[in-house]
Amino acid sequence: MTQAPPTPSARPGISIPDLLVALAITALGIALFIGSREIPFGINAVVGPRVFPLIVSVGLTALGALMIVSVLRGDRAEPAAEEDTDMEAPVNLAAPGIILSGFLLGAAVLTSAGFVIGTAIMYFSVAWAFGERRVGLMAFVALAVALVTYLAFTRGLDLSLPAGVLKGIL
Image 1 (cartoon, one colour):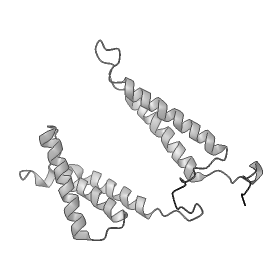
Image 2 (cartoon, helix red, strand yellow):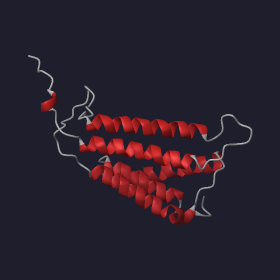
Image 3 (cartoon, one colour):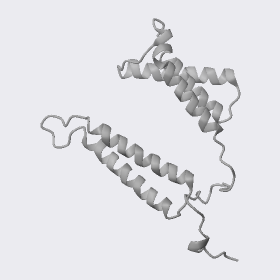
Image 4 (spheres, helix red, strand yellow):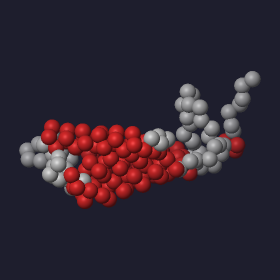
């Protein structure tokens, strides 16, 4: 037996998470637009370095605005058919909080402790948020991946990253 689609009067109210995502995308587009206006045009170039960031920023802003209108009309983001999701279940913000905390801590110590340590903290927090509890293994893998990343950027791409406490060793 098929169920009739909800009538407009039976439609649930505005989805706050959907509205927050739409507002964040719009804000990101506006911030990118403001930042991209600081990029110089380039010399004798029809398509300079500012063009693609401007295109992306306008697209993000337009997409965010369309999403805001959609959410305010009462539309909701629905999980894909293959997702096993309970839309009425409470939201667990522990994992995103752990990842955000690890990112902020890693960014805070990046210049003093160095790229390898700061990035390893970020990788470690993501592994912890996803449920890994083997601390020794997580620390080893986080440090190894951060070290490989550091070497790839500094040796392979000749970029300058802060060595921090590992200065002289790396």
